[in-house]
Amino acid sequence: MGKVITGGTMSLDGYIAGPGDSGFDLLFQWYGSGDVEIPSASPDVPPFRVSAASAELIKREYADMGALVVGRHLYDLTNAWGGRHPLDVTTVVLTHQRPADRPDDENFVFVTDGIEAAVAKAKELAGDRDVAVNGGQMARQCLEAGLLDEVGVELVPVVLGAGTPLFADLGIAPVQFDGPTTVVQGTGVTHLRYRVKR
Amino acid sequence: MGKVITGGTMSLDGYIAGPGDSGFDLLFQWYGSGDVEIPSASPDVPPFRVSAASAELIKREYADMGALVVGRHLYDLTNAWGGRHPLDVTTVVLTHQRPADRPDDENFVFVTDGIEAAVAKAKELAGDRDVAVNGGQMARQCLEAGLLDEVGVELVPVVLGAGTPLFADLGIAPVQFDGPTTVVQGTGVTHLRYRVKR
Image (tube, rainbow over all chains, first blue to last red; front, top):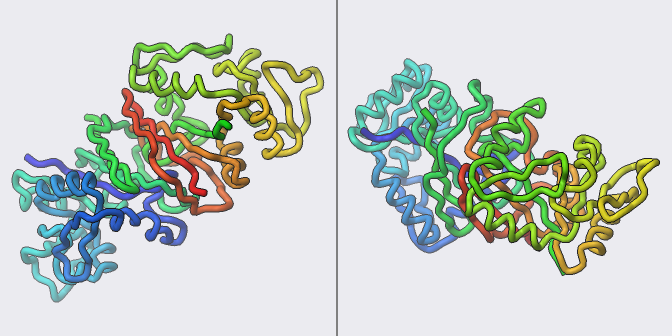
């Protein structure tokens, strides 16, 4: 049975986005901080190039990933990543209403009845592999619902001063974690992995 | 010439204090997470006991420390640490008005003309050793004034959900750092050190 994981790139003062959705250039600088390519299955998203240390961790995690859960907002914002998610797995989209012209296929599956159902569907698709949950709101709902096993933080050396915090508006704070179980220092980023306490 | 450093214990979502100054029990759990004693020079503050990895780093940093800068708020809140700061160095207190009954001595020195003057006084007292700046407001003023060389974050595995961010209300965000130059994994805490970019 795989894990349910989430993660995000975070500033040194705890923000996954700066004020007014600024700061992404600074947050994601590490995507171009090395020379090992991480391929992308999306025609719209270029591969990124990171340090060897970052690449080793990321490739291992990607290999274990069996399905994704995202929110409709991210799906629309990225224009469905041009047809397939960069991670090259089936992506479960949690939405209030499924798109009219879009049947479920190996690229995208739509779920309308809440986060539990979306994660259950993704687990079914992932089999023994992991399910990744993407986007701050989805991650928060998962943590609140007790569905989350692991949190990854890619900590970058910039102070944004304001913005959207990790797990913003969490209804069950404070929440304690075990770990970090993994600490990997890349170029311009520190990769930290934590387990949700049961 | 020593460095001017600051630091603080921070939650995984970027807060150095929880909502309404809550959460300190969770933030400072790591002060009792091991069996190596870090002595305290204050009669009011007990020594803390941390893991060997944390202790090695902290003792090295304490040995390099020549003076402290704190704000009047912290000085009053702690009742002057019972007479001497736990770190066993002279503490420069930045204040609007010096306490009437308190001449400068080897424990406390009062400065009324701003953060630059307070840091300059502390540097004079520290000689070749480092100056530590304590309290979020003092740290922010130092960073804004270009006086800070290094930031230390003791990252702990708890999500507080809200509270006081590191460098709250920073007037010069975004600010980029180099590093981390040091990553030490203790029990219940990850020690990270960053250099201010010049």
